[in-house]
Image (cartoon, rainbow, N blue to C red; front, side, top):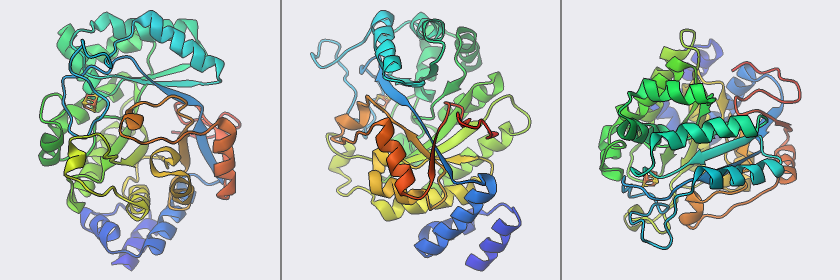
Length: 369
Ligand code: SF4
């Protein structure tokens, strides 16, 4: 089967779900990596590996979704470890991040019904006005669904308001595994328990011209077919966008579940390792033939695995993530600096190149997303 897939890839033909399953389960790792890297160079024909200077800020940890894989959320506002910041407080944090050199602010929070819709539009508008050199890469699909609930607006209307305020990109969190069976087990409640609550939000974002990323958190209750199903949903949302909508997925970003301090971690005794991660990176490069950028994560998988992933089809190394609290809550701590990230990329045999949130290279601005 590998030869059949090689021929298809060489001829820019799409691989089937059956072939994807074979690659993921049975192909030998190095052949899979080689094939994925050949494809990477066809799409991104230089040694550049991009990274962004960013941070991850959280405006609240109060959440009513009760995801069993999450160690970040609190349910009781009286709990001394719970918090909800004001717009002013968040603006101070953004200023601090800007002073450290960040060009992208990734901002996410729990699903907190006490936050009015104005909070979200105001924070976008003030960020854009007060820090014109920063891109607000804010919120995720479940937060958009919470905004529809508190505002009474449709998904599209929420995006229109965010766009009016100045938002142009949104991260892909909240997808986890795009299978209704798995979603309903790990996130039992709306707006996270079905696939379409994630896919519809992204389709609407693309309709109004907001670029998004696609993500996958694996290594918990899913089986191999669920991984392929996740990629299939992502490829199909992108098929609708490419060529006919003003925005699309800019990148695919997988990471493995971190079990410490989570309810799900009591069932899952072992975290997924580098072999599975590299297979997923390579497979996604081959299967997601309509997404240009595949992101390797030094942050979630460790420096060395992140570096190796750059030879398995990935062409982006994520961000500096100066402040990150979600994985930190699950006992996972990794930090680096701009110089550190450049060194990791260069040591792996590539050329570190800073990018924008929209994946344009800052040094040559030559990429087309
Ligand atoms: S993953 Fe997000 S939506 Fe789920 S409980 Fe944690 S903060 Fe809430």
